[in-house]
Image 1: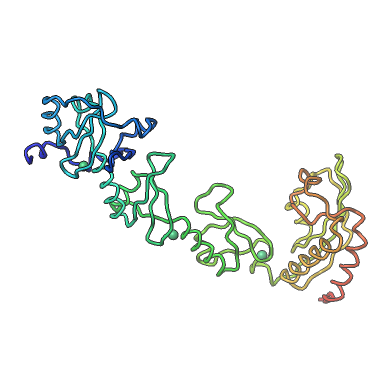
Image 2: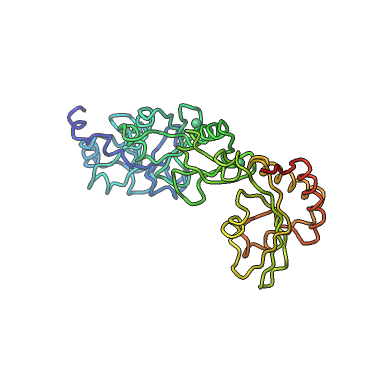
Length: 342
Ligand SMILES: [Zn+2]
Ligand SMILES: [Zn+2]
Ligand SMILES: [Zn+2]
């Protein structure tokens, strides 16, 4: 019936956003509009009444053939003249609107997916606006139908999150960093990385790609300059007990005041400063000292919650009783890095 076919709107437009569930009956798939998805499949059985001739004419004019009546007196199964698929619709829809074909909608999804370089797998079970696709890389990606139209139109491309993450992890690895995740600050250009020294920091992904990713703890910009390992005793006026802090810095004084973010009322006594030839030595040696302390005297480390409110660090804080052990460690360090008189 070519005449009636020409009356149908372009399937692409009508298929857009169309949403159908599929039930099978007598070996044929019956597309059921999404709004009826709660209706159990076994409801879509034949409704054994004659099909009025007027309905047949209406259906023909709209590009369908009435296959049979289904479910109740208000529904019919329409067979699409274009693709032959069966779709359940209300007589009311047939009378007042252009019924949409579930088969054409599905074919449209497949075509859009192919144009976007994806293989359509199935609709998302939870959100009807989404479907799952297999990307060229082999990973399964979840995308909105609307997004697929944009891809097919060349306005955007499919980025597989898994591949992207693997690429970013590899970029980071080449620079000596471990990719941890998204920017905790929510900036889409930044990621969170961990350096091999243990330092965790946010770096713009672009900078990581170009190797502009100086570690704030052991980075090249200061690694070759002299540095210090320090041991501080800190007393607070609130109920925080006396604590000792072992650390390193190129400017020990700056470090206490600016980086530890000590309350103004806190009293600091410098118990010891060991000069180190380079920041690199200081960083490595200090890390090794903490590792030794944690391994041999884990009980000396102060739990973070004790000082979370008064110190801007998350570790490297010890109970005063650790003083002697730390001094012994520092003696060893001093012996290995004798201070140069210059
Ligand atoms: Zn169709
Ligand atoms: Zn992938
Ligand atoms: Zn580092």
